[in-house]
Image (cartoon, rainbow, N blue to C red; front, side, top):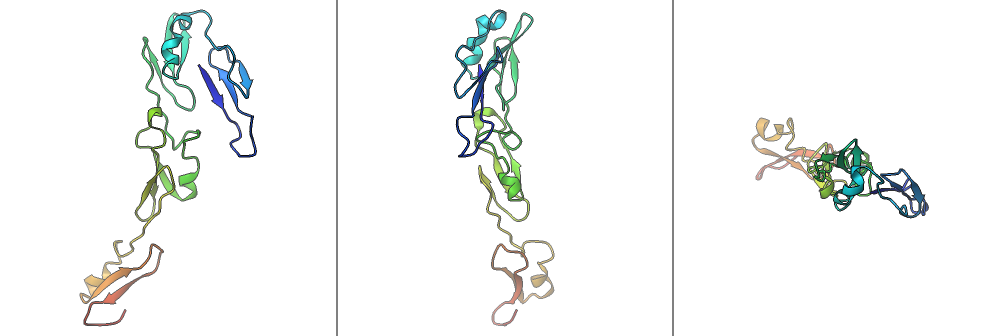
Length: 182
């Protein structure tokens, strides 16, 4: 029933994390809230169901709901635990992508945006081919496969396109043996 937060995630910023009790909104720096239990209402009797799943109990009148803790979201009524969603490409959490993909000018995709599948986000190349799980991808660019560079063989059947590296602009038409030249 507690949500812990680390506001500054740097090596030089320690002991600034805090926990907040979901039931009472009490906060304690550097340690879990000592007594964090619902008082009164349906959550007093049913909080254990939610807590066992790492969720918190929220009461609305006589109804109670299991609610996911941030940064995940989701809620379930009727004594069921919630299926917590967490898109690691957009959320802020320890296992999340943060700016990894954006800094590499790549797209971030979370193929299974659920809290139970943390660390599965992917960076996918915007130009070229490549993807990586929980890291920036190494993008490979084959300019010979791109439209327009097929001109080597189409216009000149005795030539083939060669792209020696993933850098842009380094492809060339090369003569097929026994001819020579570029």
